Length: 177
Image (cartoon, rainbow, N blue to C red; front, top):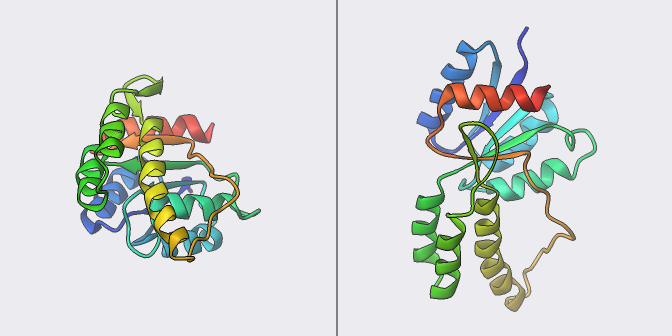
């Protein structure tokens, strides 16, 4: 029996694509359609590795990551977060009325951290999310709805979409070893 992978993505086509690609590589694939379901399946499904999309309904990938890392039974599971950095910035332009924040996001696109050949790791994308989340947290704080966590966990890898199945499999293999 192959290693168990949990794919959490609200895009059904992306879930199907990753499921087929990973099953062809010998993995057993579990799926979830949003962050809340992903956290539940991470706890109950005992996956060996988790692939999280960022922008999802009910609970985004960063929040799901924090919840998974915050539980004793799931905190050591390797996690890969998938992002579409350019589309994220486009989304942020609609949500954030702050040109300086948007410019900072665009500058961060040029800062790519890479530790595995041919796999682009976007830890800079994580910082973009934090900038976006900061705006939301400030609004919530002003509205006295803030639920600010004491720390933020990083994923093991941050990969940009579209994903090449061979490169994803290689990255997963590295994490699982």
